[in-house]
Each structure stands twice: as structure tokens, then as C-alpha cells.
Length: 337
Image 1 (cartoon, rainbow, N blue to C red):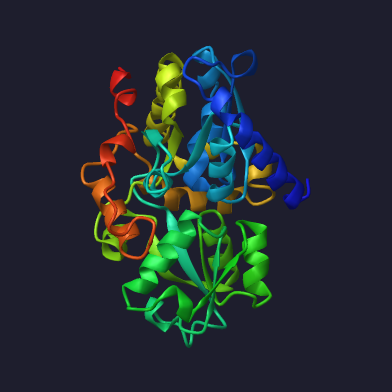
Image 2: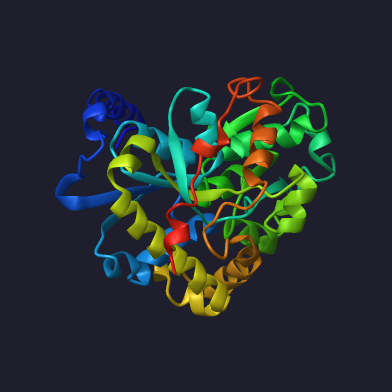
């Protein structure tokens, strides 16, 4: 669908969103549509894996997974009432609260972003760290996306403002790879399996690695809860039973990830996720395993780190009172035995 037409449809849907989101209002035929901000990204792997393992059906849920290449687009669909939930980065719930929107994360998938700032091998001679990005073009999934937030923050730690470099939305996977190959971006933020693909071909090098707790603390100063399942607060108030079932399905999925090898997990995924290079997919998944939460709970101190990062550069958040207790809840994951 043409992007402009899609945006128009989303805008029209906003008009009906209030009715759709009233507490107690059920989605059509009981279906729950979850929009994923790039369904093949490993940061969001629990969404597809839960479906593949049959955990939604075990809970009696009729779940449809849809995909948008950038989290900000998924967020817009949620606000328009077009979907009931989003698998995206937790930081959107803080950003949206600053704009008067109440979004709550009910399951945390990732203790850390799982994002990597890659620099093209061609540009690596002049870009040794984020302090070297003046005048350069940096790739993000979308404007207003979490990759955009994190890029701005990493540059700001070197006192470089967003006016001193260019940001280009290039999506993920193949579109990201093409942008770097063609020299349209000098560096960019992406996730697995794209990271492993580009490192294997020698077309890129790692600039900042946030796939592990250690790397994330070094880059951001603390744990940065990232991939999550979030919903509108008014939907949550009217659908606590559905929220409980979703939480149970995803916590079971996270436990499966923690108790199985990368190979065993890859065996559960659709073939088109790894194409003709399953070994590379397994290696990328192996690199990603440390980022997943073992229980779906918000890590202690995590929201404060995210708020600190966003307040460092985001004019919507800076200086505003943010009630972090409304941006997430452990109420539903705590019920999982």
C-alpha cells in the first residue's frame, strides 16, 4: 500500500479510536492484532516464537501478528486504534506520556536494546567512535524511532547535537544493508541478524554494541529495557483477562528461550526467517540470547535509565514530569506461575 494512503487511513482511524478503545470494547471477533516493529528482527523474536510454539492458542487467544519496519509506525497504528498491542521499544511509552498519551508496557522482552551502531568499512577510517559523526549520515529505522532516540543520545555524550549530522530512515534488514552498501549512510543502528550478515561480508564494523548487559551499561550508563509488549492504558483497563493471557504466553516463550539452545530455537522459526543461511541465523541468535529477559519483568532501575537517556536530548521529555509507574506494570507477569 502506498505510504501516503496508509497514513491517510491511519489518520481517519484516529477519529474512531476513542470508540474502539473504550474500556470493555472487544476487538472484532475477539481477535487481538499485535503490530511488531519489524517482525524478523531478533529483538522482537518472542512475538513470532510464541506463535510458532502455539502458546497463544494454548491461552485461547486469537492473535494476528502484523509487521511494520519501524517502531514509530507501529506506535501510530496503536494510537489510531487499528491494533490492540505493539511489540516495540519500551521508551515509546515515556515519549508518548510526554505528549499526553497513556501507553503501558505489560511484558519486557529485552533487558538491553540489542542494537548495534555499525560503521561501514569504507567510513571506519574516519569514524572511530560517536564523537566522529559530525557531517556524516547516520541510518535509523525511522524518524522518531527508538534507533533515532539512541543515535541522538550516543552522539550527545560527545556533545554533538542532531544538527551536526544527518539522519536517514532506512528501515531494517535488506534496506539497511543496501543503504550502507550504496554509501547512502556512513554508519547506522540495526539489530541481529543484520549485524552478523554485515560483519561476515566485511562491509561493516562495530562502533557501539548494545547486545549485552556489559555493552549497554558502558554505552548508556545502566540497563535499558527495550523490546516489550505495550498497549493503551484504556484498552488494558477493559481487557485484563486478555492481558493476563498474553503475559502468560510471552513469559512461557521467554522461559523457552532461556532453556533452549540457539539451534533449538532456530528450528522453531519459519524457514523464510533464515533463508539459505541457517548457520548465520543461529550465530546471530547466539549473539542475541543475553539480551532476553528471563521472566518478562521490568528490571530494577531500568525505567530510570531510559528516562535519563531520553531527557538528555528529547525536548518532549526534558524538564517534564514523567510518572514512570504508569509506563509499565509487572501486574500480569507476576501472575505467571
